[in-house]
Length: 466
Image 1 (cartoon, one colour):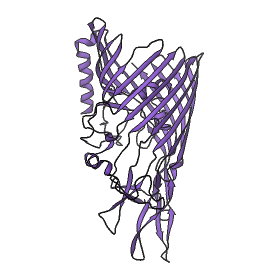
Image 2 (cartoon, rainbow, N blue to C red):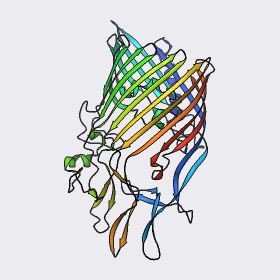
Image 3 (cartoon, rainbow, N blue to C red):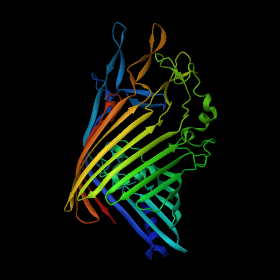
Image 4 (cartoon, rainbow, N blue to C red):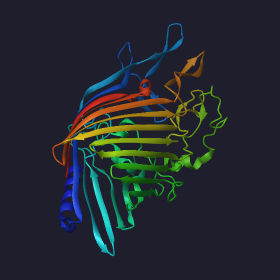
């Protein structure tokens, strides 16, 4: 079905009367890589029996691997046991199976314009994301999905461009040219963790360049739809509460940019949660003033603050062969006061919920490259500093002296760090065809309690643009 859809899209584009004009272009990019990855703690097993150990996540109702277990010895004493982590070491292609990192960004699109007179043009683009490898964990199915990428219609003139449809947000655009490892295993979204969004329902304005300076702005009227697959919400009705803005200055090799993005809090709430509003969470003491020795709070997963991010970028691009870039981003309230829950066995009507986070992150990365002849050597290093609410690294209700009690396994502050680095080599066979090889490493403090949070990988790939 997906192959038929792609074939029809290409055939329709080629058969269109406008495709033959200079104002319409069929374009694309094919990018595939052969990858080796070493990913830590993808599952946990009993160190004595080798059997997989799970716990049920009360927030989702799904079973997850348990890094810790409660073990009762012959004397009736309950102790904490660290389960054995099992790694993945093996080969794959372009983020398939357990291969981590970002996708390779292969695409096929049609874009063009129509001259409307008086300096006004209608502009359009329809772009499909295609996969050259397995993405559904079935390498024999040949049924991987096609996704829509930036697709829109708009008006353009000497005053800039207005467009509506699906599009990258301005925050993302401000530093898109600063990632030397874009669309590879070492892409800065999948390693450092920068929040690049491509949103539906975008209404955007992109200004012309004034002496190298350019403005970008977009808002997202959701019509009651929410993000993250949460469904509909009557409170999500604002025109521009979810918005993104950016500014870029380019002068020769110099690049300076700044961006800010605000995701409306109701964008994350289901209808039932939204109706409870600020009466949720209901607890004593209130959120932020609770007894730090009491891990329990009553809540209904209400997101009461907007999720925000701001980003700054600096770059010296292709200056006598040298490229140096730096990106900093702060993410705030992106988990806010959301909770993981557990039902009290003594009173199943009560769900005691444990706050988790993080609530804030500071991320940064520097990259450098040197081009000589048809080749480039490049490297990057980045860090993430996450902070927020406490987290319970697993836990179980147990019966002690005939009554239910909750035993915390490890109560950690949700303050952790990640660091990442990569080295790479690109060779341009032509202006359109590039081969690359890279090695990247991600090290996270979370590898003790979160599956697959630390990993390293080697990638050998090829990109062709047409």
